[in-house]
Amino acid sequence: MVSEKVGGAEGTKLDDDFRDLERKVDVTSKAVAEVISKTSEYLQPNPASRAKLSMLNTMSKIRGQVKNPGYPQAEGLLGECMAKYGRELGEDTNFGAALVDVGEAMKRLAEVKDSLDIDVKQNFIDPLQSLCDKDLREIQHHLKKLEGRRLDYDYKKKRQGKIPDEEVRQSLEKFHESKEVAETSMYNLLETDIEQVSQLSSLVESQLQYHKQAGQVLEELSDKLRDRMAEAQSRPRREYTPKPKPIFDFGENNHSNGGYSSSMAPPPSRNSAEKSFLFATLSFWKLGLCFNILVTKL
Image (cartoon, rainbow, N blue to C red; front, top):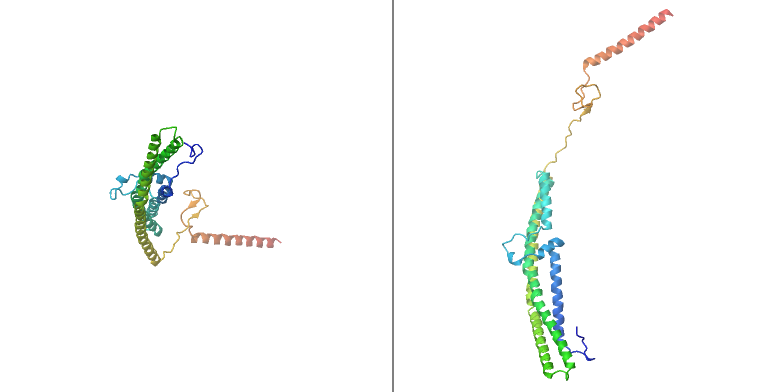
């Protein structure tokens, strides 16, 4: 790059108004690029989903033609999970039915989020991206061309007398021509910034519609869960009745499986009790007879 100073003299200065326009355009360019990036992060914090968001084709995403942007929303994934396990648990249970209710509501929220993503992409991100790709890029081209012609004019001006005056004059005319083109393009951009205000309004409107619809879904869900809780609390509580416990039979039993029996222990029969009583009585009688014989011998 040619030095700002040629032959020890300072180069041609651009006026303050031009520099002010240049500064504002530079800030606009940085703001638009950063806002596009942060808006994509706001819509999709997940980097993989954010990459898919950036690939959406605006022309093929006209309202009514597409139901979703082509990638899963976090709300939808959560809703699928809840609905799945709610049905497995059973909708005849309080928890299972509530899981299904919340899961279906979360899937509706995912659809609302799809609409937000598409609306913001079409009405906010795409117009700003077009501003970057066309108007701001064109201005940068004009400024770069102006800088080259300014340095060329400064170089030839310092060599005045060694090169034809006509060549110096033509260099100056080209410099002024480029300055006017760059200045006009910057001025037009800044004077039509109402378009960017309109795009910001579209962003806010899309968010407003999203929150209204999401709020309606959540209010309906809240009412449904409140009714479900009231209904469950009004029903009488069912008492748990335990079943008879099985016993272990350690006696000999040809039909036993390791000594375990699922039947209850039978009560002692009357005949068995009588036999025990007779056996005890007979034992005491024998003991008494032996005692009498011993005394007689003595």
